[in-house]
Length: 127
Image (cartoon, rainbow, N blue to C red; front, side, top):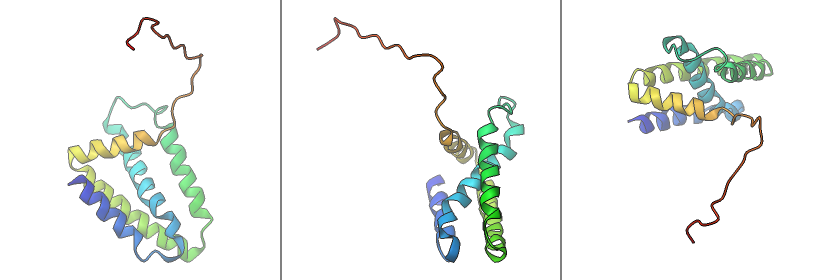
């Protein structure tokens, strides 16, 4: 079950993290985004422009990593590697892959409006 695997993945990284417990969701999120970007070449419908936001998220994660001390960075690397393996195992199932891709797509910010939004109301609408 997808949600069971997701909860297990979150529980795996919530225990014993010590100093960087605040990076738990970042680890899982980064692993999901990395798997999405790495597998994007399999989907010919995805362009590099569409991956710009995800690649920026990975760059931000690398910058956060650089702020950690040596020992914390080594622990974070091990956790990221483990999270990435878990996400890749989940992506083997087509339904889970689609759910993970949808989760990553939902992380994107809403597109900016380039023109004013016009809303028309029907004056004779139902009351």
